[in-house]
Image (cartoon, rainbow, N blue to C red; front, side, top):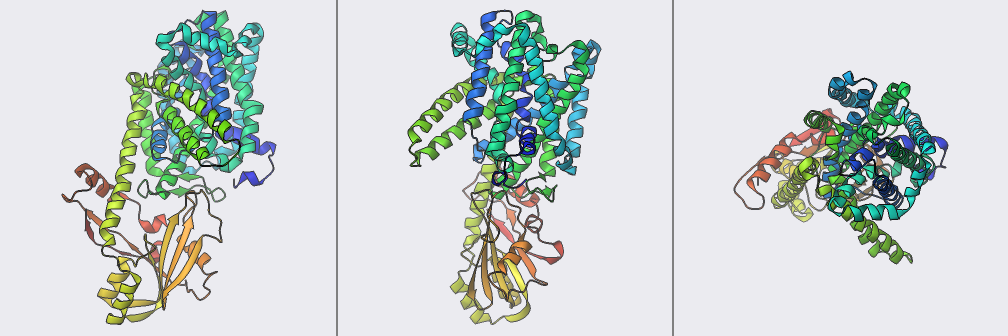
Length: 589
C-alpha cells in the first residue's frame, strides 16, 4: 500500500491498520495481567487488583498516545531482533494453553502443538503475506470485539472495578509494595509492547488511519478486557491461573482458543514481517552484509522475505518454546530489549525537538522527558527479569550489535585499504594517454562504491587488457536517510572524460534497488546512452586476515566469513546474471 497519507481515510484502510499494526499489543491480554499479579501481589485483595488495573490503564494511555517510535538506530535494530524472536513464542503458547481449560488432558499437547503452529508459520513465509494479509483486518477486528464483549460481560457483574482509572490506586499500590515495585513495572510493560509497529507501518497506512483504529476500537477493547479480567479476580481469586480464558463461558472456550490462536499467528506474522523489513533497511544502511531478499509482492514493495533470517528466527523461536515451556516462563524474558529501545527513541525525539524552532517545543520536550522518566522505570523493572530469562533477548541483541559493528568497521577498514589504489580522474586520464587503449563499441557499467574516484576494476582493465569501452559508465548507488526517493529525482549524470560518464543514483533505505531500471532513468538526462547489450562489471574482493591493527582477530575472521558468504552484488542490485562480469583480487586487512 503506497503512501496512505495521500489518500482519504477509509474504513478498509482503518481495518487494514488494525490487522497489521496492533497484533502484538492486541494479544497481550492473554498473559499480561497474570504476569503482573505473579510478581507477589494478592489477586483476592481489592487494593492490589485496582492498583494493577490503574497502572495498566495509564501505561497504555501514555505509551500509545504519546509514542512515535523509530527503529533506525544501531542499538534499536539489534534489540528489536532480540525481542522479535520472543513474540511468536509467547503469543502462540499463551493461546494454545487455553486448551488446558477445555480438558486437563490437553496439557501434554500444548508445547508440541505450539511448535507445530510456529513451524508451519515459518514454512509459509516463502509464499509471501499478500493472501493472508487480506484476512488480517477482519480477524483482528473480530478479536478486539470479542475482547470488548468478554470484558463488558464481566464488568457488568462487578462494576466497582471501574474506579481503577483513578491514578491514586496505582500510586498507592507502588507505595504499599516498594520491594517489588520494579518487578511490577517490568510486568506491566507487557501491556504496551508492540509500539514499534506504529513507526514501521506509518508509511503504509498513514497516521490518521492508525490513530482512528486505536481510538475507536483497539484502546477501548484492551481496557475493557483488562478491567473485565480484574473484575473476575475480585469475584474469584482462583481465576488467576488463566484470567483471560476464564472470562468466557465453558462452552465457548474451544472457539475462543481457535480465535486466540489465529490472532497470535497474525501478531507473530506482523513481527516476522517487521524483522524482514528491518533487515532489508539495515542492509541498505550498510549495517549488515548483503543477503538474499525475495520480494513477495509485485504490488507492495515493502513485502519481502529473507530466507536466512526466517530460518534463524524459526530455530531460535522453537528453542525458546522448548526451553521455557510456558507463556508464564517466557514473560520473564519479554520486554527487556523493547523497553530499552523505547527509551532510546525518546532520547532521539528529545534531541530532534531540541534542534527545532517550533513554538510548542518546551511543552513537547517536557512531555517527552516525562515519558522518558517512566520508560527508565520500565527499564529498571525489566532488568529484574534478567535471571528469569531476560538475558535471552539482551544476549541476542548484543550479539547482533557486535555483528553490525564488525561489519561496518570492516567495511571502513577495507575501504581505507583499497582507496589507496584508486585513481583520480586526472590520474586515469594520464593512464589513458600513456597506454592508448583499444576502443570497444559497447557500453560497460562499472559499479563503484566511491563517487569521487575511478574504480580499480576499470583501471586494471585498461592496464592489463588495454581496452576501454566506447561508453564507460561509473555507477554509484547511494542510500539516503529517508525511506523513499521520488522516481525522476534519483539520478544525476556527469561526463568526466570523452566517453566516460559518472552516474550517481540515490535511493531510499526502503526502496528496492534495480540498477537496470536506474540506468533507464538516467537516459532521461543523456539520450545517447546505449544500454542494449551493456555489460555490468562488479568488484569482489577476497578478504585475507593479517596481524595488522584496526580490528580484533575475532572481528577480522567474522568480517571475512560474512564477506565470503554475502549475497552476490549482481543479485543484490537486480542485474541479470548473463550481463555481469566479475573482477576481483585478494585484499589483506
